[in-house]
Image 1 (cartoon, helix red, strand yellow):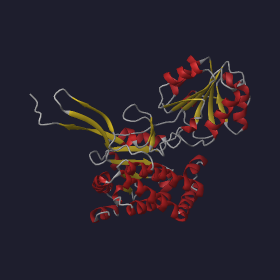
Image 2 (cartoon, one colour; image 1 turned 90 degrees about the vertical axis):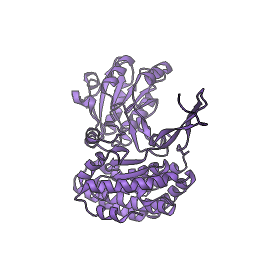
Image 3 (cartoon, helix red, strand yellow; image 1 turned 180 degrees about the vertical axis):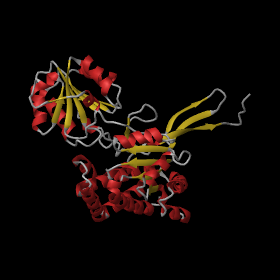
Image 4 (cartoon, one colour; image 1 turned 120 degrees about the vertical axis):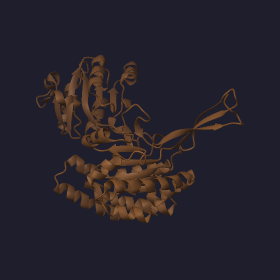
Length: 429
């Protein structure tokens, strides 16, 4: 359980640095205990946590209703309210995701490689937990469960700091999870939720080098930009989801329409939503494709050639090609072949997810090879950019950098490695 000194500090939100330090220190103690548990014990504890979450459905949904009412009163955008909203189906999905994580193969202890030197020393690299991970997130209360489950499964402690718009939902979900985890023998301090919404607590987390081992931000551009600019702790993140779909000249018209409509409109507020559609000048059904998007309620902002196809298209500005709308708004450009499409993506993609629709396998393979994004797709909607859809159970975030982990970050991305060296008395000459 939490120690008395930490409980005292947690009741005082006027000293965020002391609060974060106390929480991080207790998390490090809990993490060592968690890492000493067997894989089967951690998995069983997560199943108990999922059970408790389902048993607490009424309390969680009641808490979520408070957050939704407050969000509507504050004038939150429709897409933001959608990210915030829970219902019985979504809550059941959250519990199912926790169970899915529990049942995933445990990367901890996995031998990455092994070799023996001529002097007889045996070297192994094995996966180990990163340690204490801070997750700073906004609006989506499912992150509370996803992050906690992934961290616990990989033997890490989690310090969670959710957004003020989901404060009641996060507290209810956290309480249920911790109750179930404790029943399974996981120390309570292995998963902690920041008890204050004071923004200074975020700054204290970002400055907690030596206490927190990695920060994962999940939220809007302003949050992630602040984290990346101010953190003294390593950060795993993506800043924007400016995702492209390129409809190649050889694309099947029906498939192109189905993918484009889904990629943009299934859920406009998620980071995997398409924000720019590139249509090859030789694709014969361009007019129909643009019209279908507009007919479904999507605002289309296009270049001159796209505007000539449909009088309802609004003129795109230079900024539109670099904008993550997270709304039913889409930039559309006509391009002269795959070279032009690749050049446009290289200039404007945020490196998150980019897709090509084509029946030409050679064009598809070139696109997959040359687009330098964390996720590159052929004949699929960018809305599949999600850890669960990748078979990872859940994700703690999507990373667009080039170090450590890239794309949906799940269990393996929450581990590092250490070297184990075994000898028979060797000394170095």
